Length: 334
Image (cartoon, rainbow, N blue to C red; front, side, top):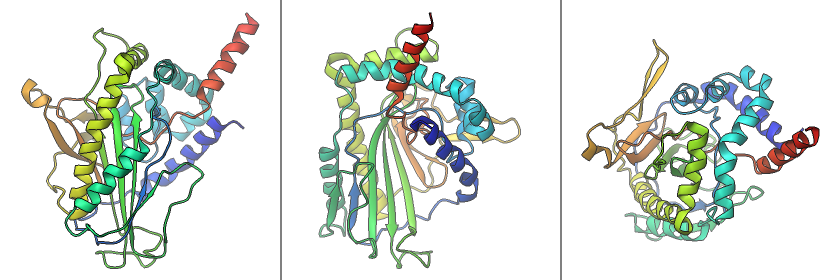
């Protein structure tokens, strides 16, 4: 069984656990001044695919943006399991043209060292955290988390990814606090966080000047991101880093707002998802904070219709290899 299939099996299993593990948003509290374990994966910038089983709403939302097969796959494990070949083809068609363009242009960069330093500086600039040790680890998939995991600690994981249709670059930061002194700390606090908060910083949306259907639009956006020596990529990452560091400081100090507007509205009667978007042109370009799902804070421009649900669903690393092998096999038959 290839790696793509293994990944889909894991995702399918995760779907059955997703609904049971959903919980109410954590209370906003200041974090204890304990060692910070910082994990910034030292991997190239990667695209994602519209498949996620952590949120029961992801499938409903994706109907607004992606081909129907992705919405069905994100809502039903049976649909995915019986349509793997079709799903792979659709994923490759959506992701790979822009991915190849970005890779050939040198846009799939990693800023692990710079980002880790910026986050470390942000931690030390937070009141009460000036003397807190920050253990930096440029994580790779085979690594384990650094530091002593039997003691109170805060774990911060940060990474950048493209949305599946390449409309935006999203910087994701996850903060998890392990301490017996936090409200509601579990009995086995060493292994289960007493507090979690996810942050998603969405870059300014990039749209092709032409009116294109989804797959062609994704390919065109790849060209736009790669122009001028990847200028848009570098600018988006630089801006996202600054905003992510700001939100992390708010989260550490317990100062994140609690009355944020919802990023999405779900109508359970009609089964439709409506994105909370500003229509006034002046407001539409202003950056605002929104709440989404338990514990997620989204930072985006008020008028930018960008989904954040799939920021952890990386396109498999062997997707190009698989697509090329299939194309060669098909060519041999003709």
